[in-house]
Amino acid sequence: MTFSYLFSIIRSSFISNNTKLTRGMSLTGNVSYQENIKSEKMLNKFKISSKGQMEIMGLVIIVILITLGLLFAALFAFNKETQKKVFTRKGLASSTMSAMLKSTVSPEEGCVETYIGRGNLPQLGEDILEDCALYFDEYVVGETIIPRGYSQFHCQGVHSCEFFKNKADELLQQSLGAWGKHYELRSDFIDEFPPPKELLVVRDASGIGCPWERDASGVYPIKVKFAGLVESQLYVCD
Amino acid sequence: MMKEVIKGRRTVSDRRAQVHLTETIAILFIFFILVGLGISFYGKYKSISFVEQQEELLQARAIRATLKAIFLPELLCSRGSAEPEENCMDVVKAREFSPQLQDKFDDYYFEMFSYANITLQQIYPSPEKIPLYVHVPETYEQRETTFFVMALRDETRGERGVPSYGFGYLQVEVFS
Image (cartoon, rainbow over all chains, first blue to last red; front, side, top):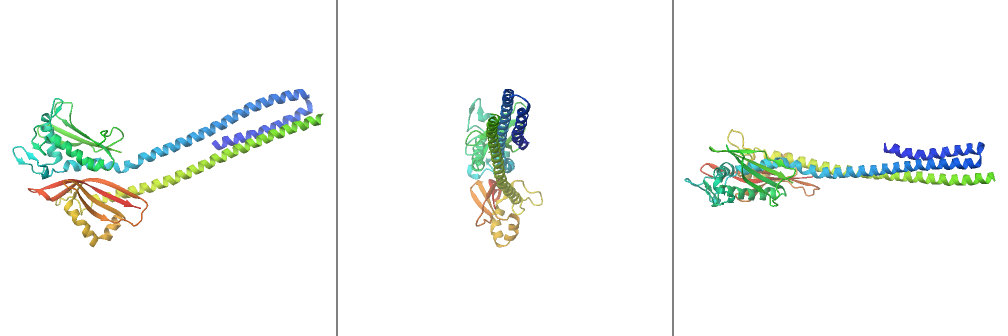
């Protein structure tokens, strides 16, 4: 299309040359010299205005072409950025969440289970997080956090919520954080009294988390004995 | 008198024709510059898209290699005849995998992974690096690394019949 526009401009300049010649020939034959000059001037005026329009059209086309080119280049550059990392990010959130909740607490952490004594390799998900939900009221009193509040498990001498938070932060920092990913882990406790309670939020070192485009692990539910359900989800983004 | 006028008119029209011709040449010049720019831009776009396509292919290969490594029956956390555990690798099996592979099954795994470097890295409870498959070419143009987080079962660290589960990741590097 643009080719035809440009050629029409070029063609019009040739056509105007031809018309000028034919008119000039007829004028020399029948009409007086003054009239000839007058009509020639009018013709020139008309020609100049139409030529100006054509030139503006040409400029507009060039501007449109350049704009389209820049737009295309920008779109291309933008696409390059987004497509690259989504490819490998998909399964990362889910696998990280699954592995973290399955991990058992090492005996070196000195976990003590009330009435039982030494904890028998408690799992971070099913034991520690469940315990955190059960004794959450002992961890957060009003607006105050009590790190050494009562809970059935006491690892490193702190409440289950505090321990889970610290451990999750450490593990995520050494994996996702080391690969330059941003992340946000959220755990909510759902019981018979809505709305759900926010148990904990763990964010990457920047503290921003993932407010923009992100991949989610999906909800990982853990049943809490006689109390409700803990729903955890991990968001990962670049 | 008339001859002079005609002569003068001819000179004017000649000049106009020259101007028109110059304009036409200028337009054609701009037109060809635009076409040239378009061609060069398209060429650059093609070359970049070719490089991107190569990168995507390498990424796809990395993903394929990762998936193969994750689901290797030789390394999975098996539970007798039951289905193996998801997102889990047996550390005891992994520790024995690499020496066995170097001795006897190098060709078999090379067909599966080609040039790659697969490492199992434990973060918790204690940091440990277990190389599973190492075939790094002497020279390579591109390298793509993929990570996959896994639970690492260790029967040797378990207590009262309960195995210990660590936290780590599988690192797969592919080369082209």
